[in-house]
Each structure stands twice: as C-alpha cells, then as structure tokens.
Length: 124
Image (cartoon, rainbow, N blue to C red; front, side, top):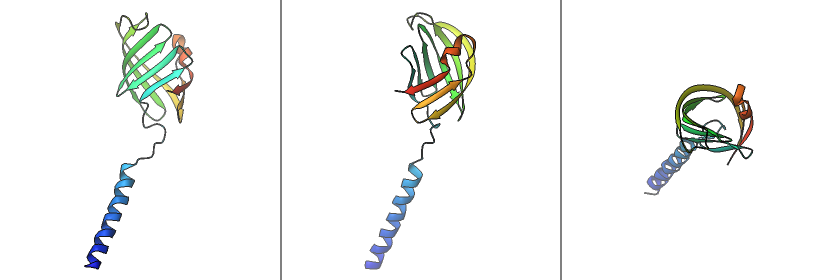
C-alpha cells in the first residue's frame, strides 16, 4: 500500500511540474501590446484585442492592427479631427518599426505628418 501511495505521489508531482511549465510562457516583451501606451501628454495608442485607437493631439484614428516582433501594421478605418467627437470613414495602412524593452516601446518609420509619433512610448 505504501508503494502505491508513493507511486501516485510521484505521478502527481510530475504532473504538477509539467502543467506549470506548459502553463507559464515566459514573456519575451513582444507577445502582447495590449493596453495603453503614452508619449508625452498629447499622444496615446490603446491596443485592445486586434483594435487600436490612436490620439495625436486633436487628431484621432482607429481601426485594426497586426504585429510581429518588430513591426506594427495599422489598418485605419476612421479618423477624427475633433478629439474623437465625430468620426469620418478613412482607410489607410501604415507599417512601422518598433522595439520593446519592458514597459517601453520605441517607434520609428512614421513619416510626413505622422513623424511626431516616432520615439519612446511608455505603457500605462
């Protein structure tokens, strides 16, 4: 009887260790952009699921996004020039580069009017 209890105890211990290793994936810093990222006081990007809302002063945009370990592709579907009070259909796609270090991302690749978005953003 003692041998059976010892045997099942070992099996239970192995199962607990195995499940804990499978269940706890280590975050490499690129697995999720979920949440709100800010740059200064007038800029934020909020990622929720596969959707984003981006604020740049009074100019806002929203749509969907995809990302890899070093690029984010924004698929804009609506824009607002009055701080999100009214929205206009507007489609565009921008792919930008980024690097992530913990709760900071550094964005590069915006050009023209979007250039102010380049730089360091902090997760809130």
